[in-house]
Length: 167
Image (cartoon, rainbow, N blue to C red; front, side, top):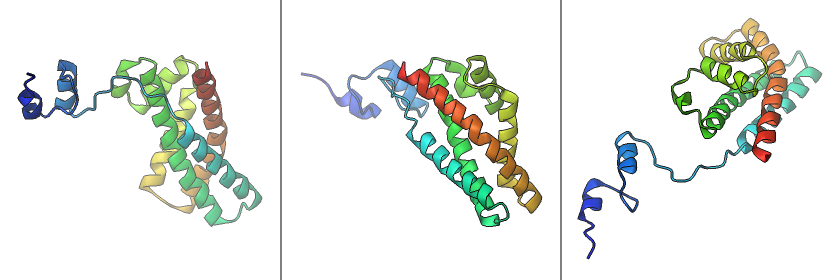
């Protein structure tokens, strides 16, 4: 007869209990036995939404509400872009990616041919940070201008990821 008391008393939810699973749980991490395919759906959708807002803002350049819409969509598209990039690099076996700053992440991505210029992405990071700490009309115009350029670079990143994941 199998003694299940150890698994129940130690809080295991999976069978068989393993040292690796125990270590992951003690560190507060979920244990995955199979890699999960990277899903680009959210990033793709956010980028499409940002492109739509950018197109509208170019047709209505004096509309502050449309400009603010671009900024908000830039914020969440930027967040999805760098987090997707981080997940991709982790999936590719870059184990130290969990300790990378965003700047290190962009440097690594550029070294692997995912981004053309990491310094440009440093600027997007600064623009994103500015949107959450200050707000005035001049800053809004600056961030809007960066968001327009970001659209193209994010599109290149998405295309590169899609190309690599299709292989």
